[in-house]
Image (tube, rainbow, N blue to C red; front, side, top):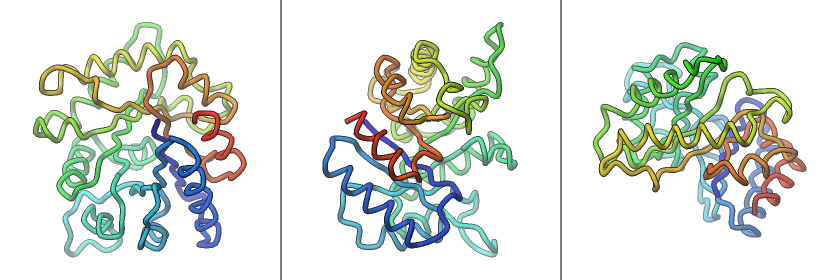
Length: 247
């Protein structure tokens, strides 16, 4: 089971970041859960330096550039040098800020080129009765993955995050039955894109209003391999309960 804790910009003090990191280390040591932390960029290097724990680190995003005269950009190579081993690509909040499918494909390729395992976020903005949202999911996956080599395609982790469920209460999250159907659909699309036509080895995460109240139900019968957790990941009590429920 993989839990990716996306701290977004909720954590701004190094002291709080250190406390959350220590908590993650204790939880990872006490359970069979693999924990990946995605702190804000300035804090990642300080936390990941000389990290010998089971906890891994992810970039919240990477630049589409490969270095040079681009003030304010943080490249995949810089994140790898700072200690990240994963990278969240195409998060809904980055898409809303202007990341198009071609940009996301560029970022995905840069992450892979520098040894970062990408966590590709996909998801529809709304659910319609005709199933058009399935086409949206297929298009986002295909646009991001189709230019990759067969080996690279196998490295991509899919994080399904329906936009209509993000930042709300557990009651607003997707139902376990609907999530199970979407996981099957994602695996079907992946099988078409992967060499050997098998998606059994691919990891699929769910993100969108993940709370201690619904985490176990979302995982139990849906077929997901883990969760992408937002605001609950920066609440020590909530994150502890969430992880222990899934252990």
